[in-house]
Length: 191
Image 1 (cartoon, one colour):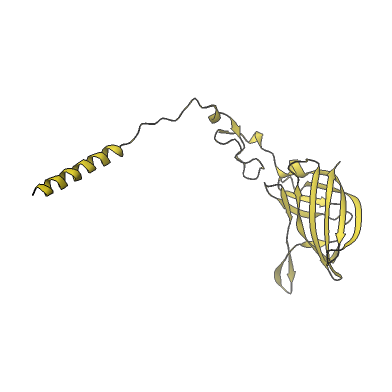
Image 2: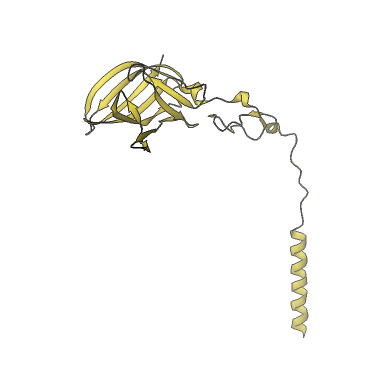
């Protein structure tokens, strides 16, 4: 019988400790924290989305892919053949600009006279060539890239802005054509 009393006593003691240990604490947020008043960009398309969070949303602090990638460049294009052997090196001007006022949809001219290559940029300093949908025999087909220079050439790939050198843009394109595959790899320097 005595064991039963001791057992009940420990059960009651454990319950009392559990109830008091789990009582709600009265904590108040530090309203004097200056981080709650600093402005931060709250636009998901911006490169600096949610930097300096928490704080007060202020989209005037945002900067976008067009802000860091847009402009005129001199591109040194190393063209490699399908076996990754250097074929040709060309130097020519290219221009990166906004399409329809977009901050993430960009165009590139200079590869094929006035023809525009279309890319979609993300907030991680990369821009990927868009795919093209064509109608073939009444069916919509998505190409893994877009036409370049001739309708027999399809280009795919991406470009990447350097985060340490704001004048440097690296370009990596693959061109599939009726004569084979070639790779365009090079660096564009902002003018």
